[in-house]
Length: 534
Ligand code: GDP
Image 1 (cartoon, rainbow, N blue to C red):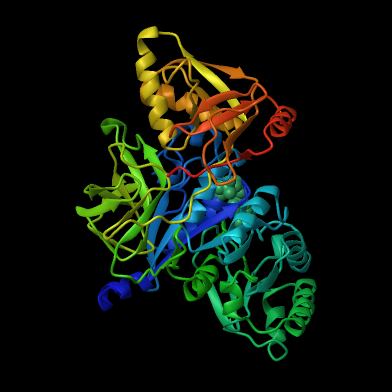
Image 2: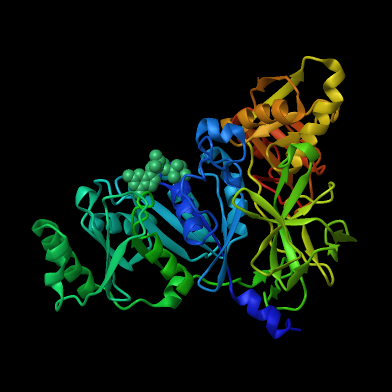
């Protein structure tokens, strides 16, 4: 059964997306400008948490500020042109790729940000592949046009070749670096001339422009060399490209490209206009039993893609972030928790707008709500107002770094154990329990070095625990399973067997060579690199 027309209307105006990029490409700066255009913040410079200004949730952790990187992912919501836009932040650093993968499970499209001087960088490529795997439509924003960089044709060629995907330039830059004056929007046939004298200006002139007929206009705003170059480039692309086909974009076959400078607020508005016109609304979701759930369904469904403890230090709270997949959410509603097979009330709920957390009473498919959690939720858990629903798994990465923590004050061991439990439920680290030692002294696994650093920082900052990390020589974790997916608890060949947080057997070995040995000794066993949480 479909939801009421009123609810359907609300669902259809949701747009949920994430920005993916290599660190330093300008994600924070672009986010800030988008929030600015969305009317959420009124002065730029708020996002990075510069002293004296407000920090948005994407930078709430002190360590993030110290390191200047974005570690935790958060959600920012704004209205633009009648749409409700949810922008999910993704950590750029590779050590937090697991977090980013989870976020990409919760969006319907992505914007890939590329530095014009650097082109396609390693992280961009990895994240792009995840989007491709999920068939998420991808916008491309080429940033930092106010700096010298690759010329736009070379850059587009590089994106196409490196990512094996066709690009469709929606806008074209008028000049680059010192000579960057504006943008030509090929779809609306307008040129936007920006005022470069001040940073972060809103002033621009919009002039109708038809290639071939109005070329002379370019010479009024650009130096001769730049104008000649733009005309030559436009001749090339206009002749070579078929018209924009929105279906090819929605199927993930082409990526529309816009150019700009996030820092100078050039081209962000043209991007937003294009985004709001073409970004897909909430998409249907597949369940494990191969059904598809329509976002317009009357039944409320959703899944937890992120858990965050201690956002508010005073209350030791824990928030489970739910992506709503269908229907309407109401505060206090009763839902079926699929994994626990019981009913639960979603009572305390919030949405995030910049640094402010606001209570929400209702939300719709496409939205993200944070619900208060007392330990019922794990990443990947599904909730629904009618019957059991299990969406596709959220991947979990095999850690490659391992260690054990020791706390100086023996009386604090219990506290450390609790803290580790919380943080591993959040997905910040993974815990492995040795059968003879037990949960009081677990082994900790991380995907990247920074995860350990954040762990130590948070143990001190949030739990007041001074601990020492002793590294262990393991570098590979695998979940042994039979061909039909049953956990294998004993292996031949002297394996070090452990248990993960949800009691699955795991084997830890020092290097790939040891794993190959185990594979030879146990030819019937599959050594899985990840398993689902739920
Ligand atoms: P993130 O790591 O991707 O979040 O990147 P940031 O937004 O923190 O930007 C990294 C650096 O690039 C900062 O010094 C920004 O001021 C700068 N930056 C971002 N966008 C632009 C741009 O359009 N032009 C120039 N010149 N610098 C930019």
